[in-house]
Length: 257
Image 1 (cartoon, rainbow, N blue to C red):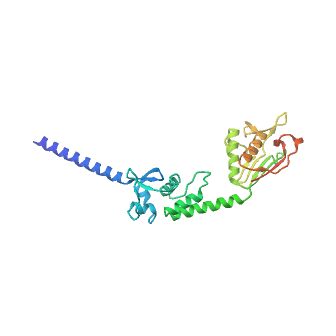
Image 2 (cartoon, rainbow, N blue to C red; image 1 turned 60 degrees about the horizontal axis):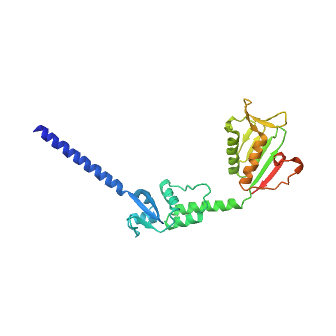
Image 3 (cartoon, rainbow, N blue to C red; image 1 turned 180 degrees about the horizontal axis):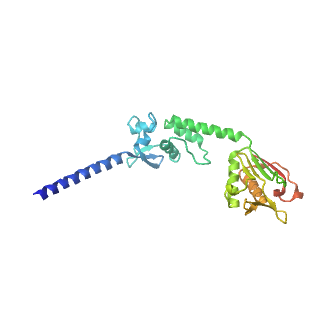
């Protein structure tokens, strides 16, 4: 009798446990929302969509705003499905994070206004205005080369982001970390300068580490800086002297963008 009673108790406990687990799964599933935005399906949590009170998405989830359903029973929103990923990322992260080179600021601002996300709309417009101002500003690049070790190779640009690209290229070409270069190699937000080199028998200037390990030639770094500038849309202003041979042998080069 005791065994039967114990078995019944265990069965009841299992049923209750399964019932509770089923209720938890059911509650969890109800927090997941599938949206059909312009033909693109997005699955997210209810709390994400209701993060900003009085927004369009909060309104349809809480029943304040009527929204049609597609054939599969998902909310259907007739907006730009591709741009909606940025709307959803904003709701998830609480800040505007866009990929490098993003150029659809005006369209995204319109989407933000439709979804009644004022904070996002203002952030996009601010980003757009900054990009427009930056596009009007002239970017200068100067590459000067002196065989005097007190000067060496100097790259100046009033756009810090271009200096960052040059730094990345130097690391790739030299196959060396920047902290492996000697102290005479200096980098700031606007300037890269090489002062540490030795001349080989044929006159080539060699860039060495502090332990005298060969890194690359100064001419190579100069050539890479020139090519990076041209690829980034800079225009050469300096008239080249054909008698000096290659552009790499010019003492001073000035670019504008």
